[in-house]
Length: 251
Image (cartoon, rainbow, N blue to C red; front, side, top):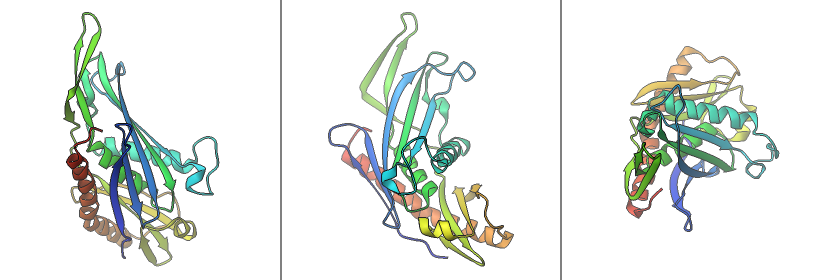
């Protein structure tokens, strides 16, 4: 198996402090990431946890397969999988977004918009989201419960704690052969798809939406390839984060 080339970079919108990150898979996929945050009360059942709300959009401009209207099945599946993965892997802890228990928490919105879709959407969205989360800067907030007043000090900001970096690689199956980083065309004509997620050199999650069965031997081969490939993906993420810090911009 061989891996397609991947490149990860970021750019900032010159007129607004919203981070824009570009991820290119096989030099064809482009994703725009818009991140915003706001203060809000927590859920009553989780009084000391904030929120991470993810949304993946696949508009008609990214592929002729998509039409205007409600989110496609692929967009909804990807949104759910990526959001659940970030939380269930322990990448972030929603308790870190709590300012005052039962009163005030941060809500982070992650909108990932695909501009040119050509396969491996989970891999790309995960790269984008991880890079963005690592560049989150939250201003210090003081809350006076007596008068229900909050004071935001934008001059002092803190990073969001990132506890691990789960990364994924997608595979397409063709009878007895498996290819990595398949294009949309390759995904459509394949007998099945498999996305393997690893963190800290260990298996984290597997996503296989139907298709032909995969032998145990081939599955372990894909897992090992993903583990070996993880360092490159993490390097791409850290490079983009480092560039963000060098630019001395606030996200």
